[in-house]
Amino acid sequence: MKLIFASNNKNKIKEIKNQVPDSIEILSLEDIGCMVDIPETADTIEGNALLKANYIKRHYGFNCFADDSGLEVDALAGAPGVYSARYAGEDKNDQANNAKLLSELEAKDNRKANFKTVIALHYNGEEHLFTGIIEGEILKEAQGEGGFGYDPLFQATGMIKSFAELTIEEKNAVSHRGKAVSQLVAFLKDKEIEDL
Image: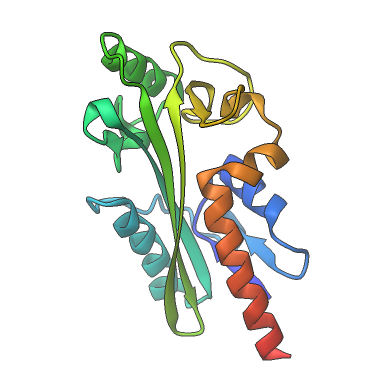
């Protein structure tokens, strides 16, 4: 089974390939020659995932999936949310985003937050959504060198390490994206059995 993942984010691709069985081949946008930066103009995380998956289905016709993720911080009324990647500007700079988040939370006691991922799948003419959410809090300073995005600042409930201090395997076992990908993989395995 081949699936296009509507992304050129090498970190996301690596995380997802790490979770998917060998029987499912994941191809990136680069692999199919799509160099377009698909606009993320929806006002919800679900909407952006669908926009990207719909674009690939419409222009290339392949079975495909796309994800969108957001960090939702309680004290900031759910921000940065759907604007997580562009929180500090259109250039999608992780360091600038993290610096802005720490600045916005400087005077706040409530540091509760959640990470949310939605995967939109187009498979044989059907559309499906898979959602993963992980609760946690925003640390007062960055911890760890791994991961990407807000990983150095996010600590999941019940953990003593930030996401940036976890291995890919440890992160996939608990993360928002890991949960959504697990649902996607379970669905695809069912489809593989049906197709036998």
